[in-house]
Structures are given as C-alpha cells and as structure tokens.
Length: 360
Image (cartoon, rainbow, N blue to C red):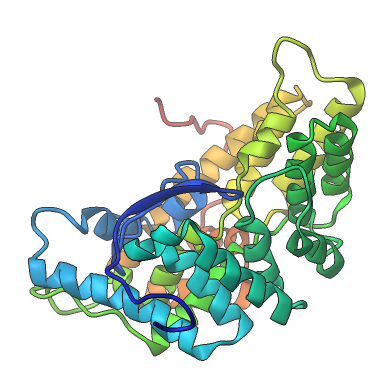
C-alpha cells in the first residue's frame, strides 16, 4: 500500500460526481473523454485525439496495453509518494483508473482530496478539484467557499454555489449565483492551468512509446497533449447546471432570471478562457432569447471550424507544434491560443459575411 491506497491493476470505469458523468479508460494514450460537449478539447488536439481514440483497439498489442496500464499505476504511485497537496489531489482524480480502489466506494479518493484541500488552502487547483469531486448536495463545500475567497472575480467559481442552490430548489440562490457570474471580470475553469501542470509531470515522467510506432514527431506523444487529455478528462466542471438554470420549460424565465442568464452568458462568451465556456455562454444567451445570440453562435462555430482546419498540421509540423506549446505557456488561455493560431495563419477572428456554418 502507498498512502493508504492499494496498488491495483487499472480498469475502465464510469462515474458520476459533482463534475458530471465521465468514463475513463486506462493508458497514457487512451483517456476516453465522455464530456461530449468539450469542443475545446476536440479543437486543440484533433490530431492527437485520433491517436487516443484508436488506443485499446484490436490492433494494439498486448504488451503495449500492459505497458500502458502499468504506466497509469506508476503515475498514481509517484504522485502519492510526492505527498504535497497538489500531487495528492491529482492522484485522487486518477484513482478511478485503478479498478481495485473502487471497492472503497470512493472513500480513499475523498480522504485524499480532504487532506489535499486542508493542506493547500491557497492552491486554486487543489480547491477546484476538491469542489469538483464533492458529492452533489444542497450545500456549498468548504473547497467551493475557498474558491470564492481566492478568486472573487472569476465567474466560474460561482458554478458551485449555483449547483448547490439548484439542489436545494432555491430559486433566489440560483438567480443570485448567475448574477455573480455576470458581474465577474472573467470566466476561467483553469483548463490551461491543469493542462500545463499535468504536462510538467508527464515531461518528468514520460509514458512508454507504443511498440512498432514509426519514429519521428507525433503530437500525441508530447507532454502538453497528454496534459490536455488529463485536464479534459478529470478537471472539467458540470456545465449542464448552468444550462438547466437558464432553460425554458413550460414556464418562461422570470424577468430577474432572464436578466441574470443574459449577464452570465455575455460574460462567458466575451471573457472565457476556454472555448467550451464561450459555447455555453452562447447557449445561455439563446435560452434567454438575448439580442445578438445568433451572431454569437455563428462566431463560435466559425472559430471552431477555422481552428480545426488550421491545426491539422500540428501532428506533422514540429515547428508549428512548438509555437502552439509556447502559446499555451505564455497565455494560459485556450481562447487566446486559438486566436493567436488563427491570426498567424491570416484568418480573421470574425466570420466573413459569406461564411456558412457546416451542414449537420
């Protein structure tokens, strides 16, 4: 045992927590993302994502599969051995990859997260994971309250009080949380920060290269791409609560709720560090029938299509990839990375009048 956690053979697992439902499959190249709306993840590593999607297929050798499983176990054990708050929190998020640890019904992970949250009160990433993996209920967790203390200007921190208000059927609390989001100066779920933190780890502890793979540059073997995959799989929030708060059912939104949804949507569309958050902001604007929501949707769709086309060379162009990595390190913002990449390619950031979104 290491730190109270049994060393175990990793296994695929699906789970539901405050961060939503996701499925993880073991292996450095086969983190399967079940958060299907993560446009950001698809856009950023489209070439590498293809490699991960193929991992675990019939063409993968038994030896390579075993090596991948052993690597995942070594990642958890290395993080546990480090023992600092962030390492403990990161290890906790990977425990679903270790099948035998499930027999504790999540207690081992919750204990690790509680220890990390207590030891790292001023580490935003630790508190974010602590808030993310708490069992959803009608209370705002200590980690979520810590985020409000650490980042009062970050609208994303108010997603947790919003979720708690929804669980408590507190309509005024939901509207109040939306107002706080709309009044914030930025919306950042720390996707870039988690990606870069994981990339640092993978750079120091590289994954084994699959046997028989051709030599040369492959973007999906780079530490940052592995870090992006880990962040997308293990550190993204449950955005559906935002959409639910602004969804029109049989009863229209009240005037106060509609205004709060519009304010939150505009903030997310204009000041998000992640592309998925921009897209969710558009969804809020659409649900609230805000003026200009069609143009906002058009902009997000356009940027997605253009970035996908421009980034196709990442898998074969080391120089382009190096610039891509530098952009992440310098901006710590996926939105800024996309804008820089398109600007270098001479692509306007606003859809031309004759641009049409793809069909289907």
